[in-house]
Image 1: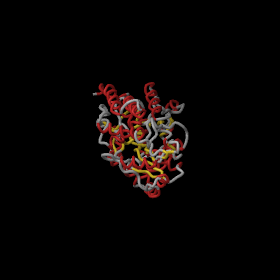
Image 2 (image 1 turned 180 degrees about the vertical axis):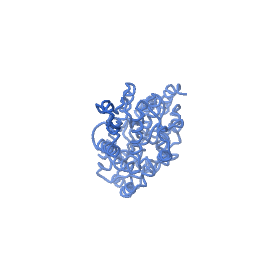
Image 3 (image 1 turned 120 degrees about the vertical axis):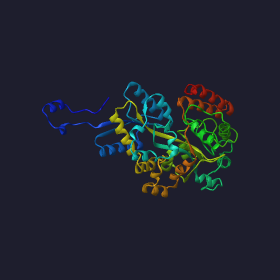
Image 4 (image 1 turned 90 degrees about the vertical axis):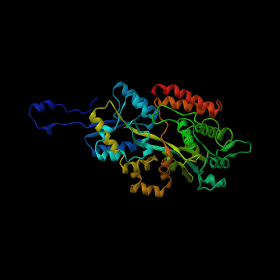
Amino acid sequence: MDRRHFIAGTGAALGLGLSRPAWAQAPTEVSFYFPVAVGGPITKIIDGYAADFSKENPSIKVTPTYAGTYQETIVKVLTAHKSGTPPTLSVLLSTDMFTMIDEDAVSPFDSFLKGPDDQAWLKGFYPAFMLNSQTEGKTWGIPFQRSTIVLYWNKDLFREAGLDPEKAPATWAEHLAFAEKLTKRDGAGNTTQWGTQIPSTGFAYWLLQAMAIQSGAILANQEGNRTAFDDPGALEALTYLVDLSRKHKVMAPGTIDWGTTPRDFFERKTAMMWTTTGNLTNVRNNAKFPFGVAILPANKRRGSPTGGGNFYLSKKAKPAEQEAAVKFVRWMTQPERAAKWSIDTGYVAISPAAYETAAMKDYAAAFPPAAVARDQLQYAAAELSTHENQRVTKALEDNIQAALNGSKAPDRALKDAQAEAERVLKPYR
């Protein structure tokens, strides 16, 4: 529905021959779905941005709606798309790109970016983030709250274990050796502190992908229609992950919950954890001990997939709404604002220019962990993203969990995941 309405009496005013300034036009409304499940600091920040933008651009009104988790948000966006009233703009996972294209729910940004300033802006993002934003020569998403996986460690527990509290494990072998020293058991043999924690619910495919990259495997092609879940590097990765718990007993057995992993870290139930850079501000605010943040340990190489959310533009929005939304996206991704968003949330600033702002330079100087994710981008690869992405990643996720629970051997789990991905993706080739 076009929300640009004229006030009552317009026709009468025209009939009286009044001049054009007598027209009164409501602002163009940009409805904006954002993935936050509950109220809190993030909603206040986004509400503030929307208000500030509308104050600077009185002809545009941005209305945020907080739509739940990423999974809940895409369901709501696609439901609204099918009913004919989608939000003008959404922040969804960068990996939802192929799903949005396949549903014919999204317009590329390119047709709105015509001048040299527009092209310079588009080229200003980190290339690693654009891998999940562009395909077939078009730009379908604009990076916003992006992340990589990093390693966090408790410096006090390192010191207690006789480890250098300022040195993170640089390799898989070191990671295991450190975890063995950091695992504590009581007299009855019960584990009171785990050496490391790598979550395996919610985003298990993402964590495994990091280890696969480190083993030289790329799990999906750039066209999103082929996977390589049974690559030898992927098997090396899953075997290492399973062995941490089942063989070496330095990580809790079975699946480990994504959402409670930071809390386990705060409560000293684990000395190390692998999780998103998006948890950086959370850790800074809640860890009651000195902690470190490091690039993930290497196997054959270093590496992490990127992650997080992009802006997407609704195909069914009116042209004026789309234009207004693109203006808002440009405004939100300016270096100073991108730097502030990174400082306030812990997400990676999306452009080199953001790290050159005075605010970010001061922040990184006072809090060096803020620069770790940026430094890891040189080793980053695109996050696993395919057509039918949720079905494909669920196949991998289910089989990772089966391996961790001991119901499947790692090689069988990956072969089963690959067979299901082949079945789902074959029509897209």
